[in-house]
Image (spheres, rainbow, N blue to C red):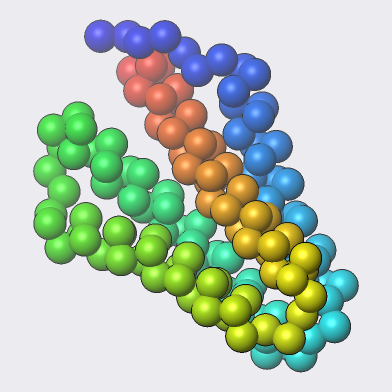
Length: 131
């Protein structure tokens, strides 16, 4: 059964959210006055979080569509998603940066995660509609 395609406006908004979150986070890191190992930590948490939410989105959708997903993989997806958010929160809590900078990184991170989920959803929906 062919479903309605995702609107071009939502596809564009999803890509803008992903780009704004990622680019904002990375530019903020590049301009930050912190050690390179700190920058590496935050960059790695960003990549880990984005991979985790895409995997979680796929696992949730697979289960909703009655595609077999093992409980262990489903649990790992949830653990990875939550742990990436907790790792960022702990890092920011202990960082010696301004509270406004902490807020910026937090919101840029969440925007990037949302964008990654939305882009994955749109891609999957459009692929399924082509079949």
